[in-house]
Length: 117
Image (cartoon, rainbow, N blue to C red; front, side, top):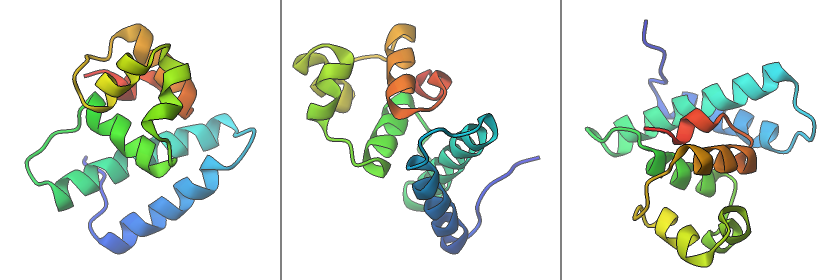
C-alpha cells in the first residue's frame, strides 16, 4: 500500500500540522511519529509534484528540513563542528555518515534514518 498526498491542498494541510508540531516543546512519541511521517510524505509529494523523477536523498531531506524550520547554513556550523563541513553539507558535497545523521536527527528532532541513503 502506498500512502501519499494527491493534491496540493492535502499537502498544505500537512504542512500546517508540521508547522504546529514543530513548535511543540515536549512532543509525545505519537506526535514525534506523526511529525516524521508527515515530513516524509510532504517531501515525497513535493518531489513527485515539483521535481518528477527525482528520488529523496539525505541531501534533499536536509534542504527540505532547513526550509521548513527556517534554518540557515550558518546555523549548522555549531551542530556539525565546522563552517566548511556545514557549507559542504548544504551544497551536497559531503556524504552524510551515521554520526552526522545522528547529529542532524537530534538537531532537527527527526529520526536519523531520514539522513541515510
